[in-house]
Length: 485
Image (cartoon, rainbow, N blue to C red; front, side):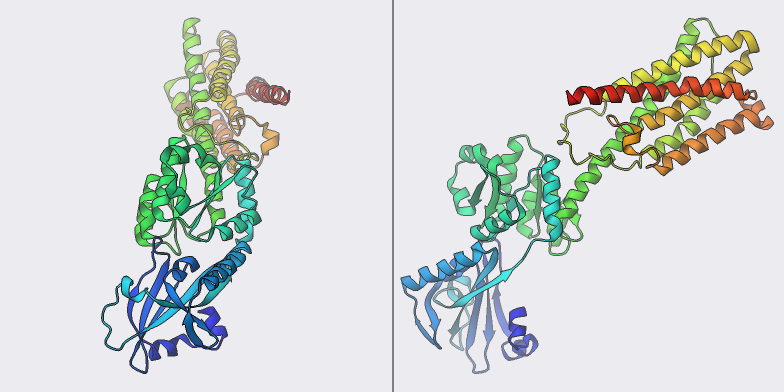
């Protein structure tokens, strides 16, 4: 249509002069489309376009120097050679043909209208990949995500684009739909992980690709836009439909719809998914390490014959207020700098990984070792209310320091940025202010059973509770050193 407009042809006028009376629609299997039009002189004209080799196979004549001639084998070879040359230059090529039907023609089935066509020529178009696709593919490679091109284009076109994008590496294979049909399931299973480009494929081939990759234990995402792509999208672990060009059936069958039909958006979604999963782990690590610490403090104090370090209302206050705000802030933590430089995680892997278990154990033990002796000391010297206030505030401060530990399993807080999550900073400050209110406002003192603390008390609490942060930071540094060796 663009080429016709450039040549001075007006589609609206042509539609009036040559109204469409029938259509044989395009499908991925047919790889062609044909329309039938009434002409001003009373005859009917068939117009066909599609994959050059498919259209050419239905032609027995050729338009040559203003007249129709028989299509020779030499001319067929020349047309296919020209098609391959243009395809090798990353051009998408269409073959165009026509024929005339008598005025009384009424059978417009594909066996009738697509037989004995007159070949007109080839139309080649450049469809360059978006600039951001190259960066997205490089990011996929670093993230351990393997990308394969699955297209209906000519093999040479697909290979040329794949080379331009850097998708074809040493040892990678390319397969066409017909070549795939000739392979047994066992043969295809052996090579499926090495295939980087699939060309001239149909929706049925997509299903077979998904099945073979899943059989190898991979998590498979498949893109599609046509109605016939729906089964493959449904079978894939993640079906991705095109929001602009995709059909409603495809969108319904998919798990994700690309509003911009952009491959880079899929990569951005992978990064977002990893970030969400990490934040769930941070949230759980924080809450569990804090809660286990509280339980351990109460348990050890009971074993030692001490009064309860925390009363019920104080425990509720810690869990609902000073625990809650940092936990919510960790749920929106920014992605770690190397989030797309790690291999994909094992889908069977528990959220409670070894680093998470170690964090829970270390923090809860430090909380107990720091809080119980101070509580015992203050009980004997300054009474139960002051001792419980010290324990209450120390638990809160341990948890505030621990919130920064949970920003990353592997990286120091200084690597991920101590102020990168401003919501966490605000949450910690708010929690400390709320704790101060409970300690110093007389009305709240009577409700929570607290007493005012001196500056020396705060310095002692901060010095001891910061041990949770210091020990975990040193542990991360040692692990990072061991990894380098």
